[in-house]
Image (tube, rainbow, N blue to C red; front, side, top):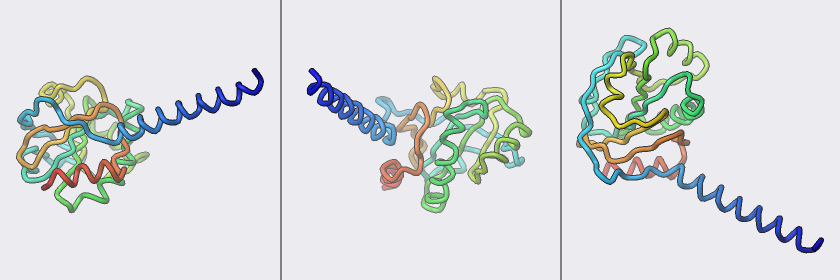
Amino acid sequence: MNRLLPLVLLAGLLAFGSASFAREQSIQMLHPLQEPFLAPEFELKGEDGTLYRLSDYRGQVVILNFWATWCPPCREEMPSMERAWQKIKEKGIVIIAVNVGEDEDTIFAFTGEYPVTFPLPMDIDGAVIKKYPVVGLPTTYIISPEGIVTHRAVGPREWDHSQLLDQLRNMLN
């Protein structure tokens, strides 16, 4: 029995490691929607006063993220979104992170801790999030250059992960 214990522990560690690796790999990928849909248009003001219209980004791949400062997974993915933004911002891909239900002061304080340079429009009254089938935060939609929502990610991602960035770049072709 004493000789079997190390083997059982090793088998358990290998199984756990394989499951963790598979989970990590699947987290990085964006899964296509079974039924893509036309992205609902919106016009929102950012915490900096800039007006953001989804239609202004037609012809680009749009990463449309819904988030809030009180959401731990949202906070977790913001640094990777900024790193991704630095790699893709001039490559025909844009990140728009729509804050849900919070005001300029709250977002300003958040960006003091988590500096980001991509657009942060505010959906203060929740009108835009109601147009998208969001089930929790963060939820991210990928919108094709033609304005079609093709993919959804529920939960945080490592947005600067090479596989995920390659998948986004391939959507431009």
